[in-house]
Image 1 (spheres, helix red, strand yellow):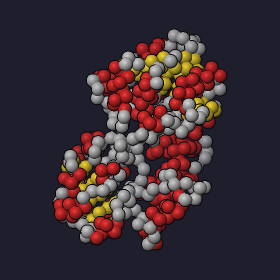
Image 2: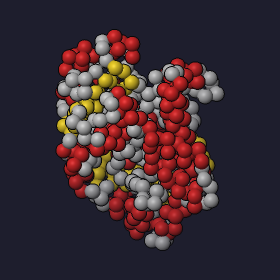
Image 3: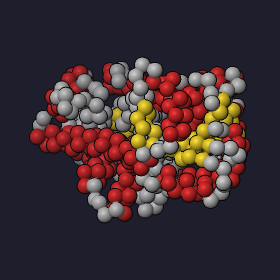
Image 4: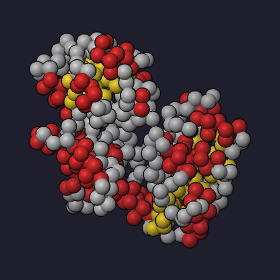
Length: 436
């Protein structure tokens, strides 16, 4: 098929590269000329395992091209995917201005019957609004479809190629047939393409993220109670996860969730609910618990060091919101670092991929109190305590004896429950995990 993808973020770039790899003719557009020039030069704007060679291969094969012209993309595609950002507005709602701008431009330039697929995460009713916007610009027949993404950053390429499910929201028979043809190669072993109306598809995306966020916050709440009661939440987690009615996914306590999806989508869902007179108390509680959880490590650090952190040096391992990405949006490490600097501490930081993005997200005052290192042991050098904020694989089995020699203090704050407490305490460390 001739496909166009508007947007070169996580969703757009992954979709464009994978669709091209499966034989489609894909034109990917973004109004950011610098971003397009960088991609053409072989430097992607995001780090995502497996994506760079996929983009390079399909550019060389001639199946994947890039442009700064949404008009060119509108003319090219029989199916046009909208994958532009929908950031949080000041009132907590989703800012759809970029999406509506792209829709309007598509409407002005399509020349033949076109299927417009909304792949951005949007409030319920957005597909209908896009249809009105496009319809104001053209008399060419078109259909708007809701096709929310369910990609995990750090595993987005594999998720796209092997989806758990593909949700297509449309009542149009031709659009259903075309989207089924497009996605069928990804679902050859079993047909996991679910068709529904557009409003239900839009709500499904928010409902999934809200439920998963609630599971995480529930376990963090249980972890904090386990700390108060002297129980081990890791044993509680295993007991819960062995119940088939519950399962073991998203039951890992830690320093809270972050990223581009959960925080933004929960705020947008709560805003939508309020507009319709509904409170969504469980979802609202999950958000409150999560924001408080980001400071659990700081509270534990203050307790261990007598409350006064001024003049102390702390190492922080892991700055991205999760492993295998350079995305620091809403990362718990941001709140941890800002709070510690506010307490008068100095920070030595390490992350395999996200360091530069992390520093760029800090104010000049906070950044001045931070040193970004290229080696994790350099971040621990002279530290009064070491904080594990993100569970990158290279942090799971460090040389603890070396850490004991180079650190000025003995406190390990394990924000992801990755380390063996008995082992590190036998080496002379003071260990503090989450709910342990």
